[in-house]
Image (cartoon, rainbow, N blue to C red; front, side):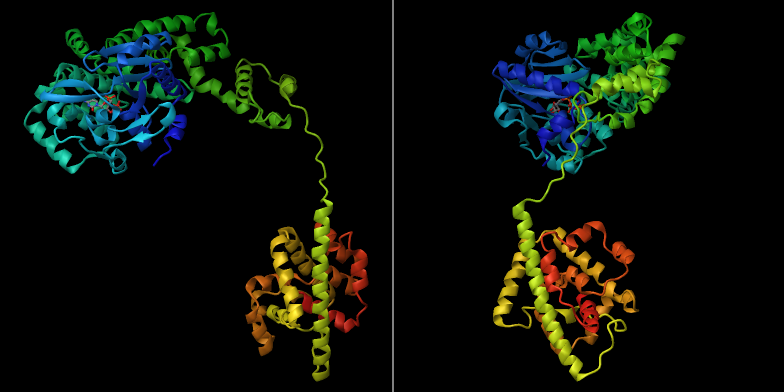
Length: 638
Ligand code: CTP
């Protein structure tokens, strides 16, 4: 289920959002509940671009007109019987506001309207995908009403009749079905298709009422691919019922293709005209004046016909403004082109033969936009002017205008221009010192680690003296590194008394919860850094970062292996970390200075010799016989 509040905020254009808010506000003031319905909800749900907005109010929609007109809305046409109206909102937004109703059809194409609730209204609609509404009311804003499970059909890309009698009652739905099938690429659901074919064969279309016929004719003009829609309806045989004089052969197809190219160029620069009137002009370019007059009479919205008819004069007026002082500089021209009513801009850009006008459009489309690449983003960053700052976008626009006007050509000029916008430098970063409590905790953990290492060493030394007595062992330098699991067998808690074991396990659990990743990491690093030192002079140095296969228990005694099996993996990891390398560093025969400096990166080195513990570490690092030192170091590696 989509998040409709999110979709309303993000999928509508700013002008559509303003229109929605205005209708909401005015309906609320008139104590009417209001819903976004029909095609707009379908398009929001399916991810298509929302072309126009259909609102349904519970109450007489026509009563909202006066207030809407006061806010700059233009009435294109109204249908008194159904209490619905077509409107033109600022920013070229087409809107339909209708009254929630139930429809009764005593005869095909002759509805009787009953004012009703939104739920009844949704059930009287054409297809399930169009029978959904979104509440725009305060307490339920964004709530989806979908009584016929339109969402499922949208997902399946199906047009399914909302009522079995849909085509018979309102034959204009036959044309709608085919137009939507062509535009959306959705199939007619199986039974809907059968009903469509039956109704078509039976000639139900002849019962189409005049008003709805006009609605379908005008709908072609609003199609994005209007010529394609006209051709599709023609091929299906519907155009001869709508207007036999209007055929695709009478359209200026080359002109339509050029119009769409111009439309795209304008959209790229942020100008969004409604191309419907311009399309209509080209779709009917080769019609006889008489045919054209007849066609225009069919349109239900006189306001739309007026827009169509005033295309030339509006464009002419715009050409006059564009040649005047309001467009004296490139930036002024840019501002004019992006703020003027978009439809005359489109028609002039498409149709003008005047060289100065063409030059201005060419600059607008192809030359001036290059300046956007010259906006000095690196300098802005250097001067701490970043996108988070309020007014950042406006500043970019201002820089762009200066650039296209030929100002701010050098870096000095740009710096001087940006200086007032540059926020003060932030204070120097404060070195946050660890709190006493945290440091004390760290010291405590390290002491525990040391204690455990001592026990570990003692146990190892004891084991070694036993071993020494039993047999000759290779020197640590020559020996391959012992397998990791072997180390665990001599760790405290594994071999010591129940008391010792208890202590070890409690310290393990403490470490599990308190030891910050940094400490584990530092200990691991210390281990790997410290280990090579004693071995550095011998062959074993190469074997120090024990590869996995070296951990094979081939050198572990059966007893050791058994102990390894007992220890949990988590424990095993911690125990591998346990040996504190600083002790190893202290105990080992001092390597060459340079080498030690290289082996211990600063950060790690500081962790290896915490200020709080040097004396303790020194005290604990008993001088050991050389051979022992080597062996201990070799074992500690793991
Ligand atoms: N409607 C209907 N029967 C018709 C015409 C319209 O049930 N003969 C309903 C549909 O619910 C439709 C809504 O009125 O969605 C609005 O109609 P309209 O704006 O003509 O069509 P949209 O579905 O919005 O399609 P478009 O994208 O072409 O605007």
